[in-house]
Image (tube, rainbow, N blue to C red):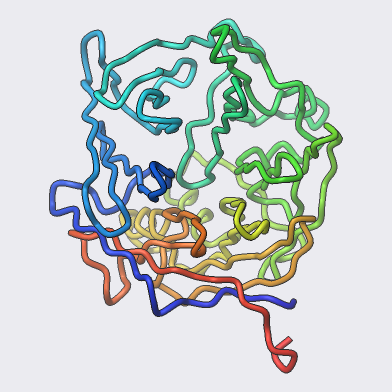
Length: 357
């Protein structure tokens, strides 16, 4: 290990939102507009655009009903102020909208079938974030990997959907998943300089589809992870399921820093919890994990460092990257947390002194 994350005492970001905007969101995106960074932030059926000095730049309020209705907004992908793709609660269609909240087009993908039903867009922009990527005229959308019973079925699933914004046609991606344990189906993905990188929640490896369209598994194990992470299993007893979620280790998101050409893989080591803990406390621990680590990888997906973040300090789900570094929102138990503000701490990757390696 040669590198670590360092908290910067400078450039703390504070954005006043007041009591009407939720201080935790399921979807946000840092965008670049006219040489300025803007944070696009979803609050229920609204998207707010703030600059990093705390000023409100723009707001979109989507109707829930009618011709411009988007009921149950779960996420969005910003291209420009004329093109904002929004994802409703139903995962087999999405919308092209503009900055006034008008629906330009409804895009239906029900003709794309998986087993006996339509393919479903993976609209998890929070717990296991899956990037939507636009390259030239194509929009690359993630899909859910279903909890199949057989490994030889997993390899038949496409890794996503390609939507051609010019022809209004969609098709499955030609890439397929590796033959992994079917219970590893929860995953995050990002697109870096060397291709698509997938992080499965219970796998000490990364799945790479490189620019030459060749796929391979790469070892990437947290120093806090066991050699074999327990399988995720649904349980009809909700208390047992949430207990397992809180106590078992799991990988979260995979992020690419295009400025430094490095990757970050987030890992949750699990914590001990009394089995008599109230259900509401379990959900709180899932929504706001007490601790996590950040694995740092170079452009070749080689681990060069890992930092365990201090307990109850930062939110692993709410993050963004700009030229200044990696930013995490403050944890709800952080002493400086204030529900009327969005507060982010900035981290930079620093080389360790030889005495600390």
